[in-house]
Length: 197
Image (cartoon, rainbow, N blue to C red; front, top):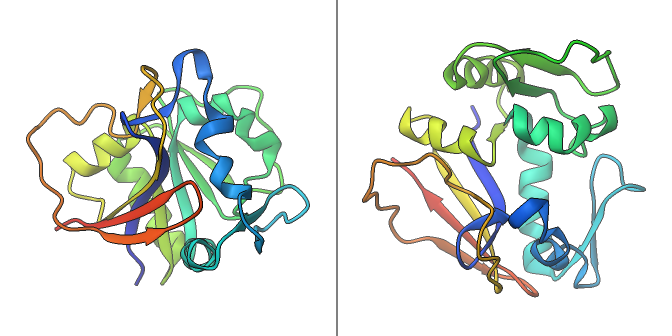
């Protein structure tokens, strides 16, 4: 059976997006900073170009993930990836109200109007022996508070954004410790993997 993890590109001051939806060109510059290619499910749309260490890190995520859980804010911000998630895996969207005009696409989107625990349970059932990715954003904080996240992956980018949306938005039961991370050095990014217990 796989694990439930969360992963995001994060600024040094903890943001996954800057003020007014800005900063993506900086947060994701590492995705094309090298010469080792790692294609996604839609290689023509997204092929990572990194160093070898980052490529191995990405391959583990891409090949090992069986389903994804996200919040409605991310779904809306990406317009549901225009109906085709880059991982090509089933996506479970936690929302109070599903969009009325959404039609089936080549990615399986399931709108879960229950708590995040229900979405993770559904995703885990679909993923089988593969991993379930959660978040980022407030969905991650809810999942951590519920004890669902087993692994926290931070792609730490050396910049500050000053404001925006935090990776661990809504995680208020502090202080909380995460132990010593596994560290992978990329180009313009440091990948930190924390095991949660």
